[in-house]
Length: 376
Image 1 (cartoon, rainbow, N blue to C red):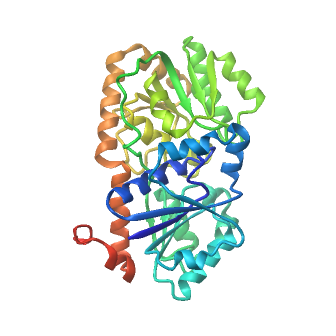
Image 2 (cartoon, helix red, strand yellow):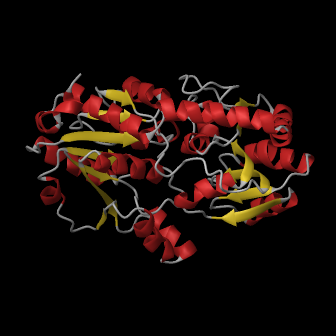
Image 3 (cartoon, rainbow, N blue to C red):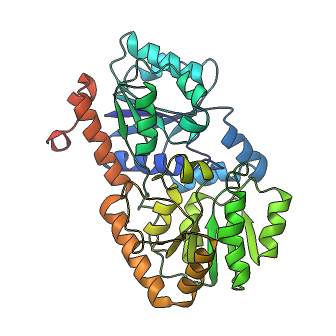
């Protein structure tokens, strides 16, 4: 089948974690013999900021790191109708311009033979509900929501008659244990500051424990204001800035412990949805300690795959214990890696996507599935 993904960006992962997942999904589809191409706006916010921050080098890095992936930029005169004429499946990401969301739906209504899916991987269904509710999704065959809480929000609001949960996952072609690297430092955090959506949480669940136990480590991410950089330095951590996702496995491998601090909207309004860094850290065999969040969808085995703190005091104890106890760290790493391999790889998500396409029964997508994949 020919898959077309409308994404905010495939090339840039600057403050755009969904690029990690789509790259993995596209690589898996290509490995199975399907075609896959991404379309992204020429003036996309993530790519523009990446270039301002890092210059053009990361764009060349993307081609070197993912030579099999193709992303085409579009502007106002892009011939969407022509490009979609031979598509079997079109997946439109939630950050796509609302006018284009409607235009693609119109192409589908006027005879487009493709299955049309809308992909939501953000908290705007709760935090910006009027914007999501204003989208014209009438001609979309199905909504792919990256957690049950988002799926339930769509169904309750009547934003789609067919809504399925499609979690993110780890690209295990990229994210894997790297025992060849020495764990030289204590704690690593890879994540963005993000409009103060977790400023207090980062202080309580990352910076304070590190300073209390006089640990060292690294913070990677973007959009950190000067006052945040001062706090990172005061805690004894090194700020490494933006990191290409292809370099993240090595960053994990050089540290003894990874920390997960979810954004406030996920921890409160959308429980059960981890960031993609949870999947990726565990896929790298990293011991992981999490700030409070509820695994309401039973994706993992909390207490075995990672430790979850009920409050900042317990977080401090967990961080200390994992850094100081190699046996505990090894047990967590082994269990978390086992769960990701069994349930949460991009290969699992492609299986789920193909199963959804079969259930939808759209003619072109159904007839294009190879016999081995179409078998129930």
